[in-house]
Length: 76
Image 1 (tube, rainbow, N blue to C red):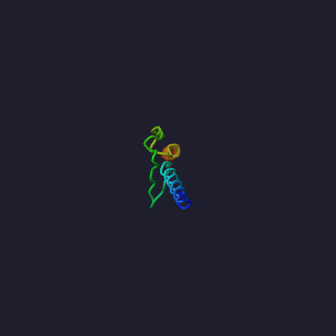
Image 2 (image 1 turned 90 degrees about the vertical axis):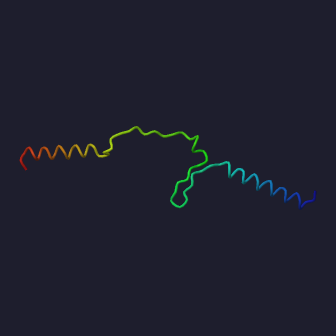
Image 3 (image 1 turned 45 degrees about the horizontal axis):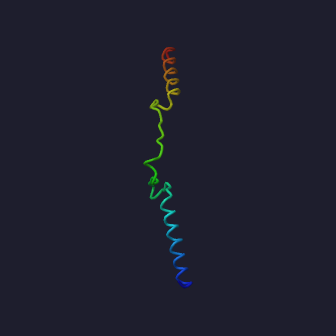
């Protein structure tokens, strides 16, 4: 093999290794407003959020109802 062939072969091998490494690594990407998953989304751990109150402001709502009931009891 001559020097030119060796250089072309080296470049081809490095390019192939780079493309393989690029394809083997996964990352979440955002394209046109979409969050596309990584290749590992099927084996990723699932986050679980326990069901809670649908009303996120339950304390404020209870305080407002108590205030309204207090105002009604006072006759205002």
